[in-house]
Amino acid sequence: MSLFQIIANKVIFYFDFTKIYTKSCASIIYSQNLFFNVDPHKFHGKDIPHIKLDEKMTIEDLVNVFASSGFNGRQLGNAAKLYAKMIKENATICLTVSGALTPVGFGGIIKTLIERGFVDWIITTGANVYHEDHFAWGLPIKQGSFNVDDMKLYENEIVRIRDVYIKFYETLEAQDQVIQKMFGSDFPDKPFTTAEFCNLMGKMSKENSKHPEKSFITAAYDYDVPVYISTIKDSSLALNLAVHRLRDKTYNLDFVREIIEQAAILYHSKKSGILELGGGVPKNTAQQTGPLLDQILRRNDGGQDYIIQITDARPDTGGLSGATLQEGKSWGKVKDAHNGMVTVYADATIAFPILALYVLSNQKTRKPKRLYKKLDKMYNNLKKDYLSDPKNQKKLKKKN
Image (cartoon, rainbow, N blue to C red; front, side, top):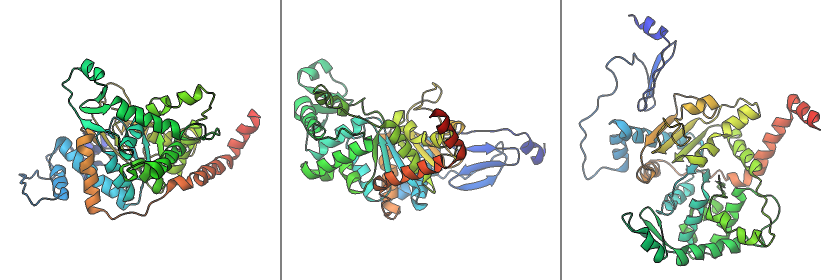
């Protein structure tokens, strides 16, 4: 069979680690930003080296080792290099954080990435924000054990997250008192977003906590990095508002405003990317910015340019956490189903420090984008653009 006949077959191949893609006009293999016209059935690709390690190796050397190997080691190496590319190209970078990453101290890594300008906005869970504040206020968190009798832990007033121990009174109740004081009667009744909620929390912790330098929430406040909580009611943050609501204090979360703000960030970005730690609601909240612009507002902007996903979730169960990044193209979440995306099947507590240290070691500090202060302007620009379309004006007139 001739090469022309092979190309004409219009067969699409997807290999999770090499991203092989064959279309009617060409076969393309993507590997570390190099493109080759190849037949995927032939023996090709880079030679795999006989890897040698020595004591003088740097994190860059280690990432190169990963990238030159196979399986998820190769994916991890490619992910680190893609993150560096996102930074070099001055892409607007969203970090999504699900799972219990702040109780294991990883908020310190996020804080450093914020300070270096490598994270421009964040979507996370209420639990991660809540537990991050323990460090700022000097509340104890300790390494424990997962092989334990939880009945006895309960008697000893110890809360467990896998092998992390948190004291019920000394930590959780103390943190609850802080949250209740922050968002009590002085908190305004007007509609708010979770970015405003976290900004105020960062301000209060910066001004009053024992160790404000030990919180990515205070760093986000300092660098005007918006921090959105995708499901605030599913966390201790919201639970602590109950004591005020029972006294008739109202909380008006403008969740529609905040999803428009998130889409407006994508709308104003020349290039945009996401670094996803885990999946869940934070993952989809970041990715749905594309469908909001394209499916709902009919703009045809095309979604994200780059996405890195670190996950341990399977794709075959149909759940969002395990959904492939390529699948997101069918929803308009990404621009290209075959380039600019890397999935690493690994524990984020292993992979994230490697990615972070790699870019910290070889990328120059970027000027902070300070998106929080620009949210109103970006929102209004998107609103103006949408309403300037005569079709959308007609829709409003019909409703009125």
